[in-house]
Length: 486
Image 1 (cartoon, rainbow, N blue to C red):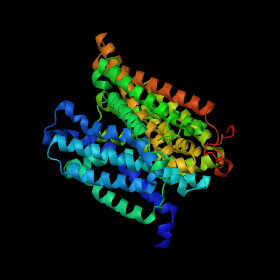
Image 2: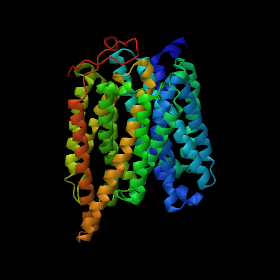
Image 3: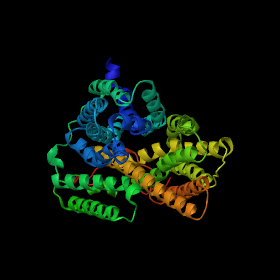
C-alpha cells in the first residue's frame, strides 16, 4: 500500500483517468444528440448548446484555474474539479428538460476546466527526471488519443444499448473512484496563497474575454465571419484580453505574471500548438464529414475507417515518442511529426468524389500517426520553461491554447469549406463534387497552418535545458534559457 501511495506512476494513472474522461466527454455526446433532441424537445438551434455549454466554460476558465491551482494548491483544484464534474454528470443524466441539461453541461465544463488546468502542472512536479517526465507525458497523451478515438463508438453503444442518459451517468463511478484515489496518491501541495496573485480584476477580464471569444468562434458557422455579431463580439473579446495583459503588467499581484511568456519554449510551444491543433482537430471533423456526405459511409464505418489514425497516434505517443525525445530532443521530434501531418493534409487536397479507402484514405490515416510525436513533444516543450511555482499557470495556459486552437480551426476551416462548396454549386457543379472541392480547400488551409507551426518550432523553440540549469533569481524572475538548438 505504501508503494501505491508513494508511486508517481500510480498518481499518473489518476491524472490520465481524468484526462481520458474529459476528452471522452467532449466527443461522446455528439452521436447521442438526435436521441436527446427527441426526448427533451430541443429545437434545432438549441441543440448546439449541448456542446457549446460545455466548451465555453471549459476553454474560458482554464487559465484562471491553472493560476488558482498555484495559489491554493494544485491537488485541491484537481479534487474540486473532479467533484464538480462528477456531480454535474449525475445532474445531466437526470435532466428532464433542455434548460436543466444545458446548466449541467455548463457545470461539467467548469469542473473539467478546474481539473484539466492543473494536470500537467502536477505531472511535471511528480517527474523531475527529464527521461521519466517524457515517458509520463507520452502516457498521458496516449490516454487523450484513446478518449478521442473511443468517444463516438462508446456514445453509440450506450445510446443504442441503454439510453442517452448513460453517456453522462457513466462518468459518476469513474469520477468517484478518481477522487478517492487522488486523495490517496496525489502529493499535497500548499500553494503560494491567495496573496501571491489574488487579482480579481484580472480574473474577470481574462475569463470574460476567453469565454466571449470562444462563444464568438463557435457561433461563426451560424452568423459568418463578417457579420456584425461576429465582428462586434470579437472586438469586445480582444479588448478584454488586451486589458488583461495591461493589468498583468501593472498589478502588484498579477493573476498571470508575464514573466512566464519570457520563456521561448513556453511561448513558442503554445503558439505552435494553437496552429497545429487548428489543423489537426479540423481534420478529424472534416474527414468524417467527407466520408459520410460524399463517400456514403455510415457512422460506424466512419469510426472504423478513422481507427488506424487513432491507434497510430496512441501507439506512437506511448511506445515511441519518449524514446525519440530522450535521444534527439523534443524539438526535433515535434518537427518530424509536423512533417508527417503536413504530408497527410497535402494528400487530402487530392481527394475525389470516388476515392478508395485503401488507395487514398488509409495512407492519410497512417501519416496522421505523426500526431503521436507532435502532442507529447508540445507538452514537454510547453512545460519545460516554467518554474515549479508557475507549473499550474503554465499548464492552464497550455490547455487554453489547445482549446482555442481547436475551436478556431473548426470554425475557420468549416466556414471556408462551406463557402467554397457554395461557389461550386452556384457554378453548376454537382453536390458531391462541390462538397469535395470545399473539403479540399479546407485541407489545403490545414496544411498551411501546420507549415506555420513547423516554422515556429524551427525558429522559436529550443532544446529544453535541465531543471538544474535554470536557477531562479532572488527577485523571482525567470532566468533566460540558453539558446541551444537541437
